[in-house]
Length: 277
Image (cartoon, rainbow, N blue to C red; front, top):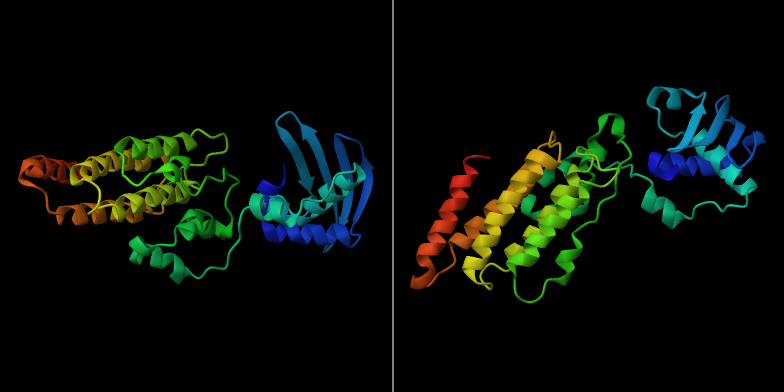
C-alpha cells in the first residue's frame, strides 16, 4: 500500500533503517502502529488502516513539506509487518511498484523532441515524473507499454485490429489511479508503439488500408491530446511526428489507377483534418 506512494531510493533507505535497529515500536495491533524512528533526530511515526487505505504521519520535515511517504514511515511499516509475520517486499516488487527516480541528463530528454522517430519510448513514458517539480511525481497508474491487441497482429495489417488498440489505450484513462498529467508520457508512448507497427507496413500492406488506418489514428490522436491527457509538456509533438512520417511515406507509395482517386481523397482528408489540430 505504501510502495506506490514513495520512490525506490526512499524505500531502500527505509529498509536500511529497519534493518539497522533504528525503529522502536511503542504500541501496535493489527490496525495501528505507533513508532519512534531514529534519523537525524527521533521522529514519531503513526500508521493506521482506514476505510480508503492507510493514514500516516511523521514528524520529519520531508513528510510535512511534501506529504510523501518518507524513509521513517517505510522503516516503521516494515517493522510493523515483521511483527505481524509479513515478509519485507522483495527487490523485484519494489522495482515494479515504487515510482522511479532518475538522474537522466536533460539532453536525453531533449533528444526525444529532436529525433522523435528514434525516441526511446521507455524514457518517454517517464518524462512527466522525471521533469516534475523537485523531481517527484504523484502516485499514479502504471500503464502497459503497449496495448495487448498489438501483440496479436498477424502478417497483414488489419484496420479493425488497429482500432482495437486505440480503444484499449482509451480505456486506460478510466483506471482508478489514472492521472492525466503523469500518465501522459505512457499514453503517448503507447500510441507511438502502435504507429511504429503501422509505419513498418507502409509499402507492404494495401495502401488504401494504411491510409484509412492513418485517418483513424489521426482521429484518435486528437481525442488523446484534447480529452485524455494533460499535455502541458508538449509530448504531442512526438506522437504527431509519427502521424506525419506515416503520411509522408504513404504519399510516396505507388497506387494503381483504380485506387488513385480514393487514395488522393484519403490523403487530402488527412491534410484537411491537420489544419484543425
